[in-house]
Length: 117
Image 1 (cartoon, rainbow, N blue to C red):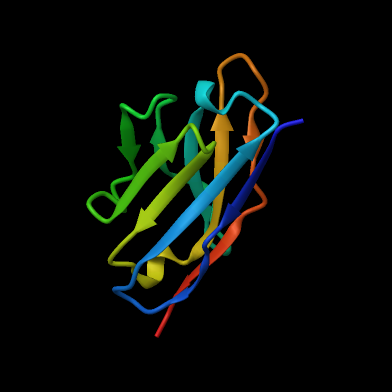
Image 2: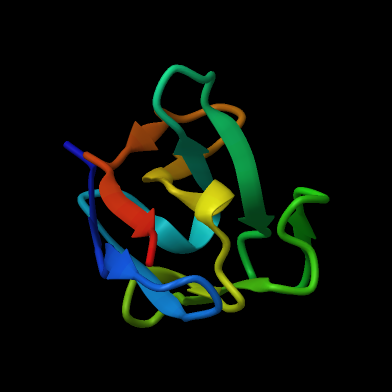
């Protein structure tokens, strides 16, 4: 059974940086598109960034373009989200998702990111 485990969340001041990690196991990591979502309190879950299976294509929500960078290391079965210039409105639970059009999809348990002074 596939599993995703996020880490790296925490409390940071506005303008600060955090790097989230998501480690996959139990599935063919390199065959999956990897995505980061976030869900703020009282709001719907939204897609933040995605990266293709081999890492040659990325896409970002307009709200994070130029500040967040998604990357992956298929040898280590890990996807990253580097978050710079953080704003209070980035506060949310961040979720990692492994997406495949045919095989099972997987979600991580989420990691809290709080941006506050």
